[in-house]
Length: 481
Ligand code: LFR
Image 1 (cartoon, rainbow, N blue to C red):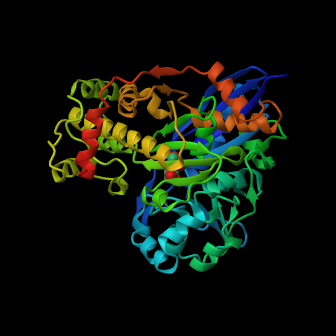
Image 2: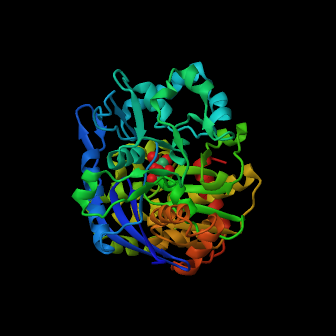
Image 3: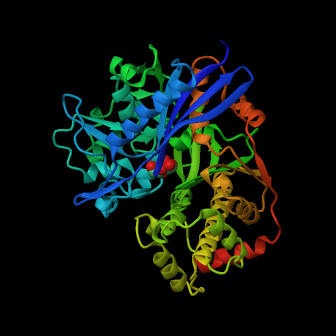
C-alpha cells in the first residue's frame, strides 16, 4: 500500500501518548491510539519519574496502535522531554528511577561547576542556556558509582524495545556536553568537569535505524514483525519545531505546553556573550538547524494553580479570565523561581506584591495574570531572539497544547504585534511521524514536510490588536526600565 502507518510515542511531563500517523504521498492523518498519565512521584530521596509505568504505557500504546492498522506498523519513533536519563549497570540493568528535572538536588551545583569552567566559557563551548537541570549539572550532582551507561529517556525506552543503545543527537544537545558548531561531543568540557563521555552510547542522527522490536515486545503488543524503531528528533521540542507549518525563514515559533519554548530556527548557533546574558539556548534541530530559543515557564504555572484549586473546569476558568481587565499584574514567566512544584498561587501573588502591583485574588484573576505574563514573556523572547540572531520575522507560529487556549494565542499576537498562526496541537507527534516517513523515503526535506502539514492540518490565524505600548509598559514593571 502507498499509505504507511507510523507510531509516534510522545511523552510529556504530565501525560504520554501513542499516536498513529498515516502518511501517503499527499496525505497525513494523525489519530490517538492511547493516552496515559505521567505522574512524577515524590519519595523521601526526591522527585522521580515512574519510568516502568511509562514503559508500560508505551507497550499498551503500541498494542492499541497495532489495532488501528491490522497489526502492521511500518515503524515506531519515540520523543520525550529532554535532559533526564537512566543509568545502567554493566549488565544493562537500570540503576534506580530516573530523577525528575524539577528535583532540587542540583541546587548550587552550577556555581561549583563555574568555579572550574567559568559560565561564559561554558556557553561559548556548548551554547546552552543556564538551567539548573542541564544534564551536565545533574551528572555532577549524582553518585555515579557502578553506572556504566547513561541513556536519555527516549533512548532508554528505545533500548527496552529493541535491545540497542544509542544517543540521539537533538536530545543529546540538551546535555550541555555537545558543541553546537561541530554537532559532536565537547570533549574538553566533559574532561574538565570530570564527566566520562564513555557513559554515553554512540550518537545517532534523527532518521537513523534504532533496531527492531524484540520478540517479547512483539508478543506482548500483538504486532507483526519485523517492526523497526527509527530515531526521530527524540527531544520533543525538536520534533515540535520540525512540525512548525512555516514557509521560508522569516518566522518565530513558540512550542507551548508545560513549557513555552520561544525562538527561531537558525543555520548556525549564536554564541555571543550578549546571547548568554539573555539566556538563549542553541539546541540542535533537524538537517543541521539550530533551535535558538528561550525556556519560559509556560502553562506549568497554570497547571500548578489548577492542581491547588482542585481541578476546576478549564473552559469556565478561561472564559472568566477573559473578562478580567488585561495587564493588571504580570510576573516574570521566564524566572526559574517558578521551576519547583507547589504553592503556585501564593508564589504568583508574592511576585506581584514584590513588584508593587495589585495582587490577583480569585482563580480568574490569577489565570489572567498568568496568561498576560506568558504573552509578555513570548513577546520578549521573540523580540530579543530576532535582535540577538539578526534574523527578522513576520509571523509567529504557535504549536503544541497551548494552541487550544485561544486567549493565550490572541494575547501572544497582541503582545508580539505580529500575526500568530496556531497549530498543529500535536506538533511533537507530527514531527516524530514526519521524520519516520522521511527515513523510509515517503516525504522529502524539512520544507516539504512543512508544506504537507500546511496542506493537511487545521490552523487558526490571530491578528494582533494594536497598542503594543501597553505591553511595553507592562514589561517595564518587571525590569524596572
Ligand atoms: C519540553 C522540554 C523542554 C526542556 C524541558 C525539560 O517538554 O523538552 O524543551 O527544556 O522539557 O526537559
